[in-house]
Amino acid sequence: GQSFGYDISKWQKWIRQNKNFTPIVLTPKDYPTRKVTESNKQSSGEYPDRYSENGMPVKTKDEVMSLTTTRMKKSIYGIEIEGKTILFFLDCSGSMRGAPFEVLKEQILYMAKTMDNTHSIGVIFFPFSEKVSVLEVSKNTAPFRSKLKRFLSQKNVGGGSPLLGAMNFAYNDLIEDRYNPVDTIYIISDGHIGSAEARTLIYDLNAEKRIAIHTICIRGSTHFLNGVASDNQGRSFLVQ
Image 1 (cartoon, rainbow, N blue to C red):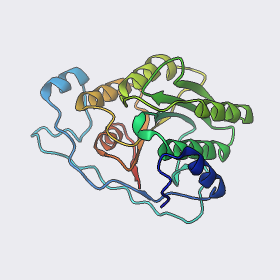
Image 2 (image 1 turned 120 degrees about the vertical axis):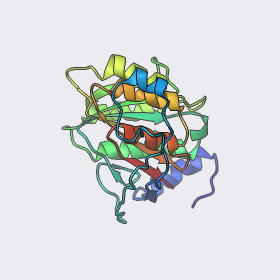
Image 3 (image 1 turned 120 degrees about the horizontal axis):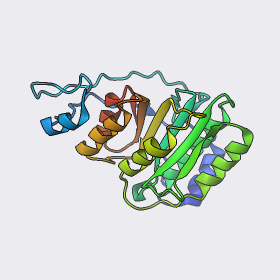
């Protein structure tokens, strides 16, 4: 591993010199999900099978990945991206400052570059501000990729990491777009970005559309992210 710490210029130089670098990607081990109380059930209707009636935890099945030494097209951290119209929720909180955010930006740009224009991509940052956190879903054309690069480069990193505000905006104002209906969501973060209540509310938001929500955790705590993925027909990955 490299030891550049928070020196962004050194990380940027190293990334440019190592364009074929692919981080090691592991999937989280099985872990017991949080128990959901009856009050949450009452407000949320039908829930997935993981919610046990007798209060016992239900485990999420491991994903097994075969990693290659060459960098796959249409991938982030070596994970092949699914879907045709994809909305990314990207963590830009203070804990992502420095190398984690620089690598994340490079990974997003590589994925877009290796996808054709039959795909559509959108990005929402969290913590969320409508004025500076949203790149609406658009066809993955060359002009869009230039716009994506500018959007990522202009984003400041800092603050807390609540996901729910960004999710509320997306489901109320963005996902309903009839011209670019989102079919896949990815949440990328380095840790715990919500409570058990937030996890329930995200399930509620997605209950009608049932969009697959995949999560990628960068070294941090996987519990919340793994739970959101298991609730919403998604896969959960841990990047180390």
